[in-house]
Structure formats: C-alpha cells, structure tokens
Image (cartoon, rainbow, N blue to C red; front, side, top):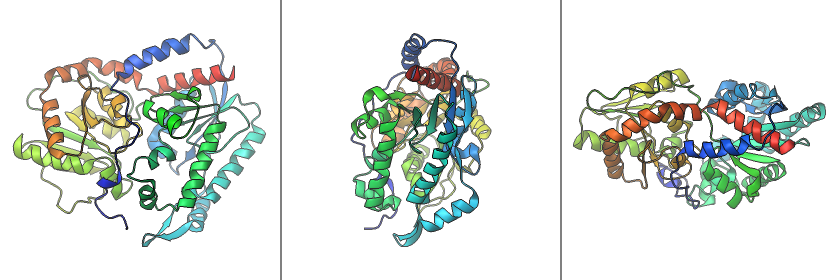
Length: 421
C-alpha cells in the first residue's frame, strides 16, 4: 500500500512516554551546581567541531550548528573541521543513489554508503593531522574518531522508527529499503557506542538512547539547546489591552508530510471551530507553510507569510498572543523555548520532549489527542487565563537566560573537560 494523504496517521504515539512536565529552570540549577563542583576551573581545551554543513552553513540544523559553534569559541579553542560538500560532489552522490521508489525517482543520498564513505575519508584525514586536539564534538553521528569524541543531536534512527505505527511504515514513507535502514541503524549505533559521551537535546531522547539504542546511561547527558532567534530585547511583554486573538504556528515545511508532522492540520481545524464558536475575529499566522496540502482553501483569518528569517520570527513572538504547535513528532521544539522566552504561552502535545519546555500553569498547556475540539477548548482556556500570562511574563527573563547557546556551550565544555581530565 502506497502512502497517500493525509499523513496524520503515519505518526503514532511513541512507546516511550515523555517525562512528567518539569520546570527547566529547576533542572538547570541542579545541573549547574553539579558541574561547577566537579570541574577544575581555568583549563581551556582545544576542541575540533564537526558538522555536515549545508551550502548555506547558517541553515545547518535549523541554525543550531552555527549558533553553538560561535558560543563554544567563548569557552574553548575551537576549530571547524566539518564537511562541506562541493556542489559537483552533491550532484554525483544524488545521481549515484537515485532509485525508482513509490512511483517516483528518489535519492536518499545523504545517508548512502558513498556519502558515508566520503565523510569517513574526510574525517580520517582530519584525525591524522589533528593529534593536538583534546577532543572532538560532532553534530549528529557523522563518523568514528581515534581521539575522544562527543556527539550532540536531537533525534536518532531508533527514535524515528518508533514514531510510526510500524518500522515498515516509516521506511516506506521515507523510501528506505529494509537493508539500507538496517545498515543506517547499525552504523549509528556503532558511532554512538564508540563515543566518549553523547549529548541530547532532551530527557526523552536520552531515554531513547538508553532503552532503544542500548547506550549506557552513564554516557548520556541532557543539554537543552539555545534559541536561534536570539535573546528577546524586551521579554517582559505588557499585559493585553483587549481580547487575545492572535494565534501563531511555526513549522518549516520540508515536505508536505511535515504539515501533518507538526500538527498543522489539527491547528487549522481547531481554528475554524474557534472562529465559529469562540471569537470570529481570531487570526492565525502559519510560518513556514509553503505548500497548502488540504483540499479546502486557506480559511479566512489564516495568513501564510512563508519562510521567515530569525529576526522576523522574533518579531512575531512579540506581536502574537499564543503559539500553537501540537507536533506529532518533536525532537525538542526550540520554537517553544523562543516563545516562552518572549513571555508567550504555548500549546503543545504531551509527547516526546515537549513537556520539558511547556509546563502547564507555568508556560502553557498540553493536549493528549488529535481531537480538534479538545485543542480548540485548550486554546480558548489559555487565551483567557490571566494568571498563566502573568507567570509567562514574570519568568520570561530567566527562561531567556536559560535557553541560550552560551549556557549550552558552557555545559558541553564542562562535561567534555571532566571526561578527558
């Protein structure tokens, strides 16, 4: 059976349950005291930094790779040893891995054997020249290294396979053959197994690495990420002067299926209910949606500004009342951190890592199902919750300080220094 619209049924409830909602500020205070007491001060390590760079490096990992690289330079001596694929090499790899799958020509070149061999050769050359590095930090599982190396990322093949109703369904959707998927999973597990330690964006993925991938718990460390829109200039937003009516959805649409992955279809249905039954003046701005997949036209009150820059998104956090992104799959959800740092509540799903950012009563509300009426009711309740908005305004400066790449870089540097000492 070929996968057809809608995609909402592809993403099932993951067998690994999320942690109970927990204030990230409490978690960090515990971590800060622990790290500050176990690492000798004053040592500045030499660190090699490896990412698989996109043609525009600032777009790599949605901006997180360049943001972290910049801040690591504040606490360590860092060299960028990442892979930059020349365009002619990219074309060659695409053509070499092109296959006829599901009625179309598809090239999964980014995870092909040739691409992995290209990266292994690149990094083996770096390792041969880089004996003076204290350690290496890679963004995703790129390769193995003879030096102590550490990995940071927000998702794994094991966690993705568990996100679908069956592994076979995920493979069919992603156009991977079973043999190719087995090789990809085995390669990733090998790289994780040989790593000195693994950094994850969330407690949820940390559990997945231990329970699904078999990584020793002692090797896994949770490092919540920073914001890619930068720190808000005025995170203490003023109380509303009138009805709260401006809803915001943010979800970069890499393919039509990501519209459903981010729960955009559910947001649209809930929005129509709200306009009909709650407030006909309600509006919804949907950032990142570039290909409208629904059979009906874009509803009245919905605006599609397309893909926006980080500075443009930051302005939207200040001009809207509520972020609504009930993702069906979310490795972390930096948009929730960015919104709460601006003093804006969020509505998310009680799944994956979302309860690690969106805490009911403190920063928003969580839904547990795909019922648009329940989502509409939750949105209406949040919009009218004065105490929740006051909590968000009060906590915004601390949240902005916490979800910073400066803090993430400090934590990573502290742990690497401790592990190699």
